[in-house]
Image (cartoon, rainbow over all chains, first blue to last red; front, side, top):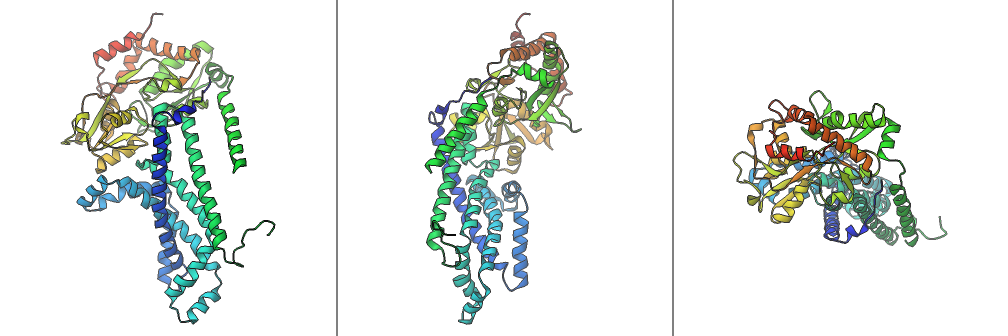
Length: 241
Length: 285
């Protein structure tokens, strides 16, 4: 009644290559989805603070609708429910060109966009109102004031929660395996299939996620220090509160 | 960073130790808890599935309850009940090694590499992989899948064979049958490959069974066995005796008929050579 560990399965055969391919797919899907999420987040986050009520409603609807439905459901939605709505030639083209990958990108991007939106709204609302008034009084239009003054400041304020959100996005990309995207978790299962060594494969996957996320967190804390606005977000230095 | 690494290595070492230790044999565990816990499936008719009246039943489950449990109960001298837990191709080996379940009774193919991690009972069913396609599809078997989009169940032996034999086929792997079938029905994939008997089950359960055809010769050999923790031969012996007694006495064939007979869940006549093979596995008392 023992389980004998055999770590060799991770570097013998194709396991190493699969893990690498999985890592690359995880990074690809995460980067594209992250870009989409940030774009949607900035847009809807800004709209949620807009003076025009219908725009606020529209943004609120987007946020509440997309963040309050489980990600798994969104995966199935983008993969199974959306393609039949498209014209036949486009459907065929999509199915030939990794429809599952793009469904995964949309599911992750739109879902996390709604979550980013809240982070960005919090950032915008923490910029003192006087800055907006000052910006507008220099002759900038409202859009210019947001684009040139408010959002750049807000983005710097939200680096810590946005980092958290980004790490969540990377880890949530594993849900895409339910629609057949061959990302990192998928590949660890693949290794398990071929070698029947589940614990070794899962451990390898865990360590790769951990390294990926710790690396990103480290980079982001550098970015945070580099772009900190003195007096608005504390520059972390030793011995200082 | 260094400290983090040290911490992780320690954690691994500690959890590693916990996993490998375990003093109790399976029979002792069954005797103590009064229950045999099996890992089985909810969506693989007719082997293990939830039926219309919401009962968790099937051919594999019947074999456990009617053939194996009586033998174990007699051996340990008390009544035992069967507890069922959901297992999937990815979770079944960890479920066993972590002592969560004692026996995997579903549609698990016995393979040499799996025998590195678990022990198998004798073969209780034999099938082979085929393809499920829409009527009129150009796919006729493994010779015609090159360049096509093929769905497979993740973690199955068929996916592995397709990948090795027809590298140009675009293989999409889904965690369960319903997702794969949905992809087939909508055209994301052009065929779904799995063990022939599973496809027959899926077809029988489809809203319009006449729209689907199972094509191709068996391109693999899939002997189903029940998996157990390694090196526990007393328990394995009882499982095998249960199966052998059922085949020898003919009760296996009654159970077979209940699920695969003309009036069964998935009509699938037992081939004479398969019957002979099952009987040859029965060793004398």
